[in-house]
Amino acid sequence: MSNIKVNIRGGAAPPGSLADYLKNVKLKLMTISGKGGVGKSFVSAAVALGFALRGYRVGILDGDIYGPTIPKMLGMSDATLYADSKTGKIIPAVGPLGVKVVSIDFMLPSEDTAVIWRGALVTQALRDFISQVDWGALDVLIVDLPPGTGDAPLTIAQSLQGGIDGSIIVTIPSEVSRRIVVKAIDFSRKVRVPIAGIVENMCCFVCPDNGKIYYILGEGAGRKIAEKMNVPFLGQIPMDPELSKHLDGGRLHEFLSSNNATTKYIEEIVGALISKYGEKLKQEIKEERPKRVSLMKLPGEDEDQES
Ligand SMILES: Nc1ncnc2c1ncn2[C@@H]1O[C@H](COP(=O)(O)OP(=O)(O)OP(=O)(O)O)[C@@H](O)[C@H]1O
Ligand SMILES: [Mg+2]
Image (cartoon, helix red, strand yellow):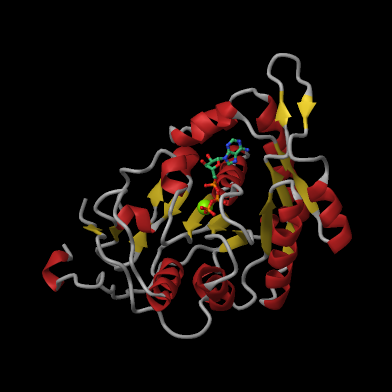
């Protein structure tokens, strides 16, 4: 391959809005939550694969710089990013079902390497993931974000200035979830990203023996909050030990392609998004070749390490 391996991260992203760089992407969604560990990355990956299973062209921008987990969930831990030798643009790694993925994880020497960057570098990396990546023509781009309402979600929302079509707010059932959702809604409204809706993850446990549903953490909290806050409810997903094994083993696509109770819940969420954004998904887009860009180094990295 004449392309150059990317062991560097970009830094030449121009100031201002980057929305133009994603004009070949019909639908741009970001996954957020006021709280960690509620299943944002899982929902991002599951929704992305759900769209891909229906034949859509999908990308995932892993916006979690300090704790990227998308590659592991998709079984892509060994993937590498390359830069196109002609354009200099980063080519996303291609995962299961043809999903294009860009993650800082692909640029780290090992999965145990910590990224110790101040906020400004994180901001720059995220802007590079938009402006220096050749995403090509996509139907859907899912941006997976770290917990909270800090630098990363703010950068994505502000860099695209109105370019994000919706935020998927992920929560779990419990009193804590109410606060998570209220904060995420407040954030979305303040940065002017429309709310796609709420997903209640780990809603319940479906007994594999008899199909009986147990609401371990309480029933219907996600839907009630959605109604109260006047935002759409996209659906719920049970906690499922089989799913967990598939996620840990990087085989989420196999889980979603098989016939099981949990997959039906995920299909409903994808169906709700397709109904909501049907018009956008039908748009015609013309793919344009990217312009040449230059790339920046990792802090402390030498020029000669680039090739
Ligand atoms: N419905 C589910 N059933 C079983 N396991 C789940 C489910 N949802 C998520 N998990 C597991 O819970 C853990 C946390 O999920 P995930 O990494 O998606 O959360 P997150 O909100 O992205 O976390 P962070 O805030 O650290 O980014 C993972 O190990 C994942 O495999
Ligand atoms: Mg995550």
